Amino acid sequence: MAHHKKERTLAIIKPDGVQRSLIGEIVKRYEKVGLKLVGLKIIVPTGAHVEKHYTLDPEWKKNVGEKTIAAYKKQGVKPPVEDPVEQGENVLAALKKYFTSGPVIAMVWEGAHAVEIIRKLTGGTEPRTSDVGSIRGDYVLDSYQMSDMDGRAVRNLVHASGSIEEADSEISLWFSDDELIDYKLVQEQILYDVNIDGVFE
Image 1 (cartoon, rainbow, N blue to C red):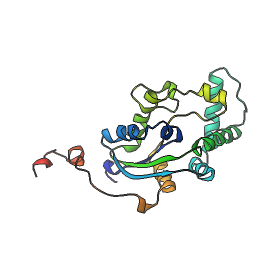
Image 2 (image 1 turned 120 degrees about the vertical axis):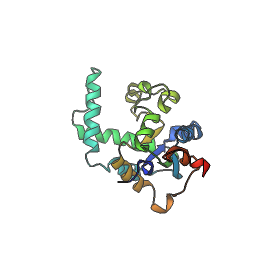
Image 3 (image 1 turned 90 degrees about the horizontal axis):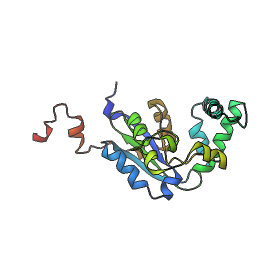
Image 4 (image 1 turned 90 degrees about the vertical axis):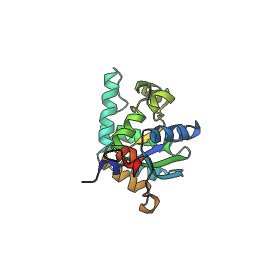
């Protein structure tokens, strides 16, 4: 089993994050916790690329459709459609429009529990209910109610892989092997040296 310090995850600063000049602030949050940036690019994704990204899991449309329908019902609102796959298609169409509206910053981060740490720092999917101190909680005020009213995807600044398996698939979609760099940071001696006495060596 690979050491936790070698775990990698994908994070994408979405078009609203780029347009609001939050690139440096978002990168700083991930760097300050001790994660290492091993891949970085600016790209304007195509609709086909975005669709492939969200449908790497063949069950994604159905799963997201079920969650969306359940969320409508929990709020006492009649869902626009009752079929989960059709609802998933609607969500995907909104996401494609959102992701292709401008440049995004695709990043691969490496470090102990990278997937979990990036998700924690980024915050919950809906900015309105994200914790204060998270990127979404601190820098954006969008909500499901507003995005539904406007017929668009919720604007939440960052995509972050949800599991190690998802991260592996997503990284392969956005980066080739030769775009990812293996290198050491000085701070890794403090983060990962078993006895922290490497400073005397």
